[in-house]
Image (cartoon, rainbow, N blue to C red; front, side, top):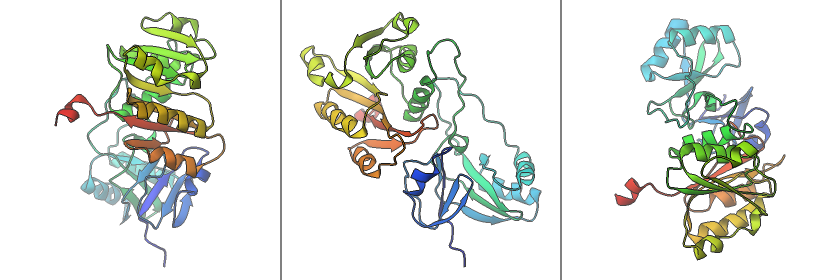
Amino acid sequence: MTPEIQSAYLAPEGLSEPLLKEIQGVIAIQDRLILSSQPFINAYWAQNIWKNPKIIPIDSINDAAKKLKSNQHNWCLYSFILHRRAKLIEEKLNSRKPKLLTFPASISEDPLGSWCLLDENTILASADCTSPFPNGKPSFIEDKSGPPNRAYLKLYEALTLAEKTPKTSEFCIDIGGSPGGWAWVIQKCGAEVLSIDRSPLDEKISKLKGVSFRKQDAFSLLPEEFEKEGRSIDWFFSDVICYPEKLYDWLLVWINSGICKNFICTIKLKNESRQDIIKKFSAIPNSKVVHLYYNKNELTYFNLGQTQEKQNN
């Protein structure tokens, strides 16, 4: 007897291998969708996780749409077989194409479920998924002229998932900031940003109001410098290229200093999954480690201070 499917994990393009190292009880691999007989875990390398998938027998296209609608209204198809049949069901669901997001974007409060066809008469569907985006992919309206590279999309996604952005009057530091994609996003949000790198910012970024640059080895920057000035830091951003162990040790210094409220950092992992060091990052209190759609062989670390509203409750 085939084991019951209790969770499913959608791997990022080309990154099934590190995800498979995290998952137990693998039943089958359907293209990028990994089916497991074990309850879901918050796998770091998953682009989307189907938490409680259900097998739904169907008699027809109309029956499939009816049964999915009886669970909830918003569904996203992941198609790997029987594409034409799956598309017809999707049309009967009246599924709309995802709208392009304008940054800063808010996450919809309506849950988005995921489904697929396992065979002609069987659907696998999960009304509860970890990503608010269709198959874990946010689609932003891109700016072709402002930012100097596409790294800004990574910060768009991270801040959207954080559900808050830097604000006017806030001060941010941007480590490993050259050529300035992240500084461009931060400045667009209205905050002041100091970018630290050995290489200069793109000229058009360095001229933006509220953007300053310092040529410096990132790891020589320490909290004491800002403590002496009596200055706190609202956001600590880092996209610096370094070994994850070095980032971890340096990040702890900043977190323990208490001088920073919010951290968003890229953990560069090259071609290794490195579960040991990833778990150390995630074990830091109030932390989360995820793979963003716009990440490559890297993960993103979040440690977000509470909003004023939450602090007052």
